[in-house]
Length: 384
Image (cartoon, rainbow, N blue to C red; front, side, top):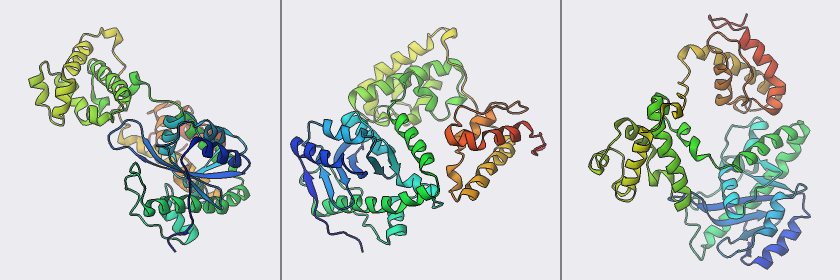
């Protein structure tokens, strides 16, 4: 079985959307998916919004809707659970489209991990595992901004939403029976909170790979370039790497070209970038170079040395033990960034403390155990 054969309800005007939203506000949950395009833009361009109630699929045309206030009410209604799958990009779609985010949120990919299925399970695998249905893949990369949408695209969108509702109705009782609903909603609430915040442009340099290799004087230049790159990408709605490729940032900072000719010889720097923004880039390099030393950024932390792996592995085992006891995917318990943050609080000799990254139920469940292990950990790699 590959298709429900259901007929879609097309919503392409404000009054129809408002009327349906009033219905959805009375439901215990709605299943939601989005189709979007994001090849050369900073922000995703919504091509279709799908909403399912377990019986019907509704396809909202975002190219026709101009008033999203009714949908905002549904997204923010606390009595209606919003069901999505692997929703980080969907959250960006809603934030940009209507300035609202779905809450409370039930992410079926996270729920699968809570139920001991694979971590980061794809939607097609989840549908196959729980419903025994093989989803067609031809439409996943199709053009969702074209009009009219093809019958194949419409059927794909309908099936997607109806299957998502079926999965929720299977998963939610199992999550509830295991006593994990609160933990799941805590995790998804954190996702929503993070999605509300755009990255701070002045902190964008910290996310650049290999930036930890740069000196504070070089970081001052990198900070200038990344701040401009982030702001200009948003203002022009152009993908960061289309404006200025990340791969060229560190070489640009290290070589510090002073002319357009020198700039154009840098590998990975697109000629379009030199033509459009070359003078701006050279000026930013000059500004960074002239920044007073007291304003230079602090050096970025280096990767943890190989010797730290013993403590990292020991801390990870705590999460694995709890995951096995609770029947959850082990990767769900302690993320790499949390483990590394904890090790950085005291490496190599301690004392260690719980990092800010360890929050909520994980901190309550494992915090004291992790702290005791880390502070009792000897240089031989054994807990004392």
